[in-house]
Length: 101
Image 1 (cartoon, rainbow, N blue to C red):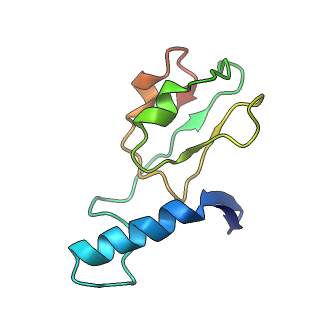
Image 2 (cartoon, rainbow, N blue to C red):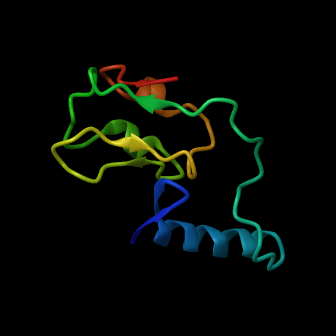
């Protein structure tokens, strides 16, 4: 399920499963949503002029938090800042260099 909150789209189903996973690891702390890593200083974004709108976007596959979101198959995806934690794994994954900081 895709939801809209605070000006960003996010995968609400993914967030629910992430809350459950965190509660299991942290002794049922239902308020904990973020993983144990520092907040990012930069969130990458998709450069629409470089994106080739691949049918099987490799960068989306390497994103552990599913922060690279494609809504329309004919349009470039975007990176949801509410889900991205700035690991930058997507930057080298895109063969066209369309994901930049």
